[in-house]
Image (tube, rainbow, N blue to C red; front, side):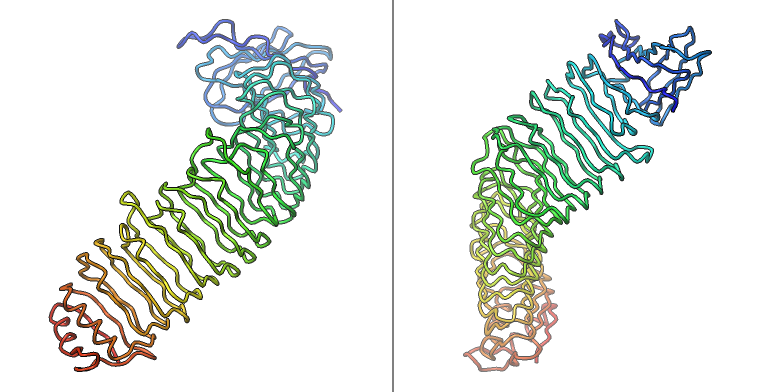
Amino acid sequence: MVLYTPTKVIHIGKGKNLGAGGNVPPNVLRMFVQTDKFKWSLINNTAPYTVDYGDGNTYSGSVSGAVNTVEHIYSSAGLYTVDFIFNDITDITRFQILDIGTGEFIQSFVNLDKTTNIAYLSMNGTKLQQSTVNVVGTSMTFIDFLGTNVQRLNMSGVVSNAGSFQLSARSMPELLSIVFPTLTDNYASCLLNDNPKVTAYDLTGEGAYSATVYRFSNCTLLQSITFSSTSTTRGCSEFTAENLPNVVGDLDVSRFGGFGSTFSVRNTAFSAIILPAVFDSSVLNTTVVLLNDNPNIEEYDLTPFGAKFGGLFRCYSCSSLNSLLLPTSSRAVTVEAYDLDSLTSLDLSPLSGMGASCNFNGGAIQTVTFPTTTGSATNFTILYGFSNQLTAVDFSPLADNFAGLVNFSSNPNLASVTLPASAETVSNLTFSSCALPSFDITPLTGTNNNIVIQLQNNVLTASAVNQLLVDLDTKGWTGGSLNIAGTGNAAPDGTSGGNDGLTAKANLISKGWSITNN
């Protein structure tokens, strides 16, 4: 084997930015090679550089978003010192170096800092054991960029002493195992995604420290993720565990200070998610909470999110879920909680900021409790609860933002609907194929011209049909559409319930309404 990969890499000149024109001293990465040739590649944005091969020969080039390989053949084998020199750290804040050689022979990285990124070490094999000194702000990135079939990574010698440290081992199709470092400080991110053959991630070496970003996704053979047992008050701004079909047991993330911004656990085999009992006050507000396609989880207790809960909440296709405990929060939130085959009760009352969209169709829900929304809550554009097992729905708490498209059709046991005293514009009310004996439209006080009302296939009595037609005539709305036909509904007449439904129907038609009835 020809050994043209360095055995040691030292960042000897870190550079002080002088603005346009360069830096002093130069930004220099030094490599020691025992070989008769040298071959290395870089990836970065546009950045001019010079390579001094250590035998009197140099090469100057630039990287422009693509792989740029430098290769040199020496007149004879020997020990050579190779320097990569960057003269402007304005354009290159980190060296991004792609090893297309046999990187397993690199034994140490010395004096690295935030202007250095030993990245894309794609062929590190089984011998890589970095002894890294002063890794301040360094990003350790391992990506099998060239598809070179790395099977093992040993990072046990890596030492981190700064919060901007990043650890990334991803997109490695043949990777079987990773040995993680023992950390000495908090760090920025831990990215361990798209490694389809890795079976375990053991992060116990984090000790009392943690990252702010974790990504575990698309690791189809992964069976376990083990965190340190030492608690920290430090929260995570992103936690993603997705497409992990073989990770069984509990996802215990109780050691962390909380989760803000993005929290996503989707398409996994976890049996439970264990959150910290109380989130630290420093944790960010959530923007996205995704908990879908987890068929083994029976309960989501999200109460620790508290007042930080908001944004998008998505929970669907969790066939075993029978308990959903939501946090008390007034932040704006949209809810998608559908295809829940085992959840019979949905309590949305803690979410006083709920608005814009709420969708919980296609499940086993028998009861739903809406929150008393505030004036700051966004008006609904979509409010769906169709194809469930609801028996009664009381919308009255939603008086401030009941609007848009409302569809609660195909609830075969739904016998009671209470509309709210809403002055907002409702464009569609669909309660078809239910068990409604009557329908009271009077609480709606807005000007709902062109409204579409679908009540076909219920059990509306003649008295109820007449009352509805008279109430709509009294409202004065124009251009609407009403369907009260179908199996189970009575036809309007001139006397039932003391109302003349036929005259009211004629009046509505004169106002531009389309009426379909038995």
